[in-house]
Amino acid sequence: MFAVYAAEQQYRHDTRTSENERRILASIRERSTLTPWSPTAAAAPRTAAVTVRTAPAWPRPIGLHAHERSVAAAA
Image (spheres, rainbow, N blue to C red):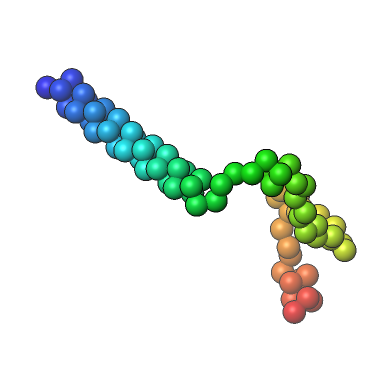
């Protein structure tokens, strides 16, 4: 009985997975028909906004805790 249950569950999983993959492929096809691919757009360099940090953000070492005195002094 367990083998039958496991086979049913595997079938359902495979069916859901294949339906999801079909939906993804359909959405990819739909997007590609809306905006056709052009080789010049793919070759164009991307300009990304680079944020410059003025002060380095140093990570706090593991196990280091703020003391109550320093918290009270900061407030």
